Length: 337
Image 1 (tube, rainbow, N blue to C red):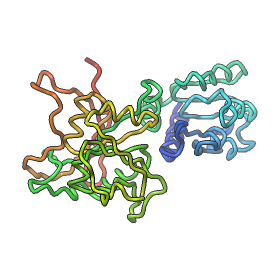
Image 2: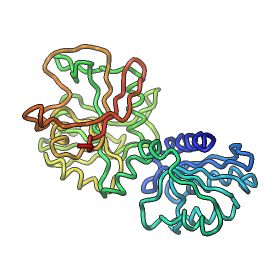
Image 3: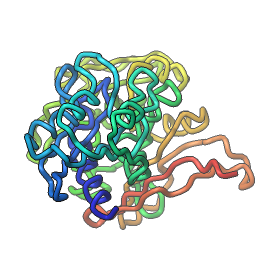
């Protein structure tokens, strides 16, 4: 099982590398081990219309796939969409075992495991399931379960919880390494949401950029919410990406307008963050915490509708990572009661 877990981690790396490029398909990774347990091929889902991860890995493995093991982050699909079922390719390659992390929740594509078993293939499920569910498939699985986009509130803060100094300056609280991580996540996201206040104060471009400052090859939809008119000269309206302006203060209306998306980042200031938290539509918090003290009145979030400590919004950590000198805290709602 150690061998399978290592192969699954490699498949997860493949899937993470194509996040943002596969919509509406999930970002899946696959690894083919030959009969001796050696890596024969790796692959990830190609853009829509291209091959699924299993087929990419099988092509790279060639004849070494026969008698080997396919390790996939998601149950191989069993339906004919733009491409044939992945189960067909696995059977044709004559693999002896198929290992996957997560069963496909989409009833249209599900059933691959049963068909493989019926053909005499050994099937093992649930390997590194938590790693996959909390990693490359987090947002897609949420969309499958709820029918709405997965919404992450992302913000940067000093260690004392301030998003800007007393004079309003905030560039930059976090390090180059943390900001590079933000741009990587922006590239993978389907949309970035800010309020009109952020546009007036910071005039952000809301683009995904590479370390050299150039634009990434994929850009998210930029979404500005609020009732105030923004200047036609605002960077968020430039030609670097598309922009949607939504005349509302209701987070639920914003979510409905973005209903065809999977991965949404909220990067708005304290007022927008507070509104989305009060509405209960935030599914994850990513907090970049810098080891600096700022003091002053400008906090990372405004009113979240908590009148007393007994009514606090409860979250739990599901990840802590050091990025340069900063910490990245990942939190999800605490539903354990």
